[in-house]
Each structure stands twice: as C-alpha cells, then as structure tokens.
Amino acid sequence: METFTGSFTQQEPIPEASVEAALRILRHGRLHRYNTVPGEIAETALLEEEFAAFTGAKYCLAVASGGYALGCALRALGIEPGDRVLTNAFTLAPVPGAIAALGGVPVFVETTEALTIDFDDLVRKAPDAKALLLSHMRGHICDMDRLMQVCAAAGLPVIEDCAHTMGAAWRGTPSGRHGVIGCYSTQTYKHMNSGEGGLLVSDDEGLMARAIVLSGSYMLYDRHRAAPPPEAFEDVKYATPNVSGRMDNLRAAILRPQLADLPRQCARWNELYRVVETGLDGTPGLNLIPRPKAESYVASSFQFLLPDWPEAKIRALLTRAARRGVELKWFGAPEPRGFTSRHDSWRYAPRQDLPETDRILTGLIDMRLPLTFTPDDAALIARIIRAEVSAVFQGEGKGTEALPAAD
Ligand SMILES: *Cc1c(COP(=O)(O)O)cnc(C)c1O
Image (tube, rainbow, N blue to C red; front, side, top):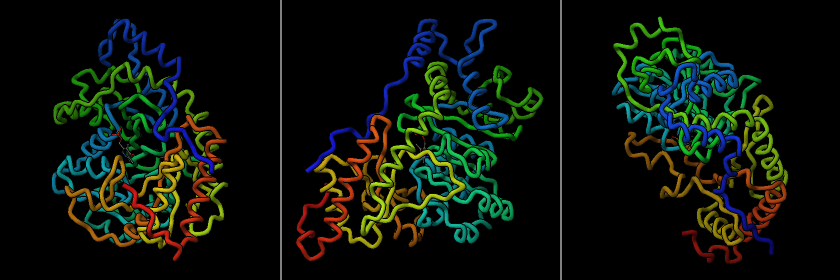
C-alpha cells in the first residue's frame, strides 16, 4: 500500500536573490520605509511600483498583512460602525474579522457548488448593505462580469479579497482589478512569502490617498511612488486617522524577486493541480469543482465535494487518508481546527441562516498543494485519495461505520 511522506505545510525556501536583498537591508539597517538616504528609493516604494505594474493598477500600497489591507480598504471606503457589509459565507476568519474590527456587521452571502458567491442571495441582501467584500476563497472566481453588473445596479462598491488569487485573472483582467480596491496577502501560505504582509491596489485617487494616510504615512506620503499626486492628500491628511500598519523594507526586499518569478510559480501550482484533477476525475462519490473557461486560476490548493456523504463516512475518509500521509481538511467539521473555521463559529457576527452554504461545506474537502510537491507527489496523492474515497464510498454496510473518528 502506497503512502505519502511529504509535508502539506512546507513551503519552498526563500529564493537566494531575496536572501541577498534582505542581507543588504540588514547591513545598512534602514528597515523603516521612510528611512532613506538622499537619492535612495525605499524597497517598499519599489515593490509598490512593481506590483502596480503587475496588476495594471495606477496605485499600490504595501501594508503589514492581508487582514490589515482588508480593514484599511473598508476604512478608506468610509465604512462606519453599524454598517452592513456583505461577504462570502465561505471564506476565512480574517474577512469577517476585518468588518467586525470596524464595528461593521458582516452579512454572509450563500455559496454555490462552484464555491463562489450566490448571485440570487447577493441580490436579495444588497439593498441594506454599504459594500461587498468579495472573497475569492481558495482561488475560485465567480462570474466577475455578472457580479460587477449586479453590484453596479445595487450601487454596491466592491472590495476584492485576493488572498488566494494573486496572479489569477477573469477573462484576462487580473483578479483585484474589477472592484474599487483589490487586497492581497504575502503571508507564508499565500502566493508570495514574506512571513506577513499585504498589498492594496486601486485606480481611485481619493481612496488610495486615504489608504496611504491610514497606513501610517505621517506627512511623508510624497515618498510613495505608486501613489496619487500630493494635491490628492490636501484634505485627506487632516481628516484621516493614522492606523499604523506599514510594510517595512526588509519584507519588501524579500518580495521583489518573488514577484518577478510569480508567473513561473503560478504555472507550477497549476501543473500540480491538473495532475490531482486528472487523477481524481471520475471517482465514484466524488465531485470535482468545475473551472469556467474565463477563469485563469492559480491553484495553490485543491478542493472536492463528497455530496450527501454522512458525517461518519467523511471522518472515516479523513482518518484513512491521514494514515497514508494525506492531510485533508474538512470544512464541515462542527468545531474549528487550525486555519479552518466556518461562519457559525464567527460569533462576533450575528448568527445567520445559510442552508445552501451549510449543505455544501458539509461535503467540502480541502488540501494544500505547496510547491515543495513534485508532479509525481501530486499523482501519488491523487491515487491515495481515489483509493480511499472508493473504499469508503462503496463500504456501505460493510463495517465502515466502525472505523475510528478523526480526532
Ligand atoms: C490569509 C487570508 C487573508 C488574510 O491574510 P493575512 O495576511 O493572513 O492577514 C484574507 N482572506 C483570506 C481568504 C485568506 O486566506
């Protein structure tokens, strides 16, 4: 019986060019983004210029984390305590967390079988809301043409959470460029790794001026390069609170070589994804997530559905796969574990009735695909999952229920 011995949480080492850049910063000691010598351009400002160019945005701001980017975007948009902000019911905790941190009320929108936002529920909930914080959760992108039409008709500004779609696109437009602001994360488990870090992009002068002052620019905003002209800050600089959350030059230096290499990395993720997808195709009892033609995804993780499986069988599958070294995560688990939690465990948000999302999450299995895996690893993982899903699925009435529950 084959087993897998790799680690689902081990990312690649930081590239040598990043290590060298980091050492240069450490040796001169000017880590703060506004600490420069005459003629020097801060690494942070250069990263912002390069990321703006990468996404085709006019403006970019580098910040301390992806979660900070979301909060900063909502504040820049003028979200105030008591405002209702729509977001995906299927997302990660920092998304409703960013809304709640501002005193806003997270209102969850139902999920489709494609793991994207449900347009009918969005239309129903739009009238009372101030904004949509759209989460491209696990890299699945909804029909962005239709989404922007629906939100324009409802007068709803869109902020995009692109923590899982850095480098992805919808019909050729980079993810994060449909809404008024796009937010990205450079935390270790995302598409670039600076430990912690975040980026915001926008074409809106007023929004970006506010975001820059919010991030803690003091009166040094003219040191930013991918930024609106100084006139845009005239009123903003007095009225906008400083909520310090800047990125530093060390992290920016680590990220710049990674950004240059990002298209190659994205292609490597997608190769692993396609190997797993091919390996699981046609497995009885298992549904793959269809990927629309217009979507250029960056699949740094893999999801599949076990529709209508009883909980005992899902737990049996998780246990059996784990014994063979395959670490599967289950969004249907009643108790939150590790990074995985569900809308009903975010008790800072009012409790909401989301029967479709609950039904889908009950059968949703999730797995990371770090770039330390080879295509052969991906093929082995798919063989193990296929064998175990088949065994448990067909094991009805053959004592499957007696298998130990996952811890
Ligand atoms: C990681 C993540 C974030 C926040 O990023 P951090 O940099 O960890 O704060 C936001 N949304 C989603 C979907 C994420 O996975």
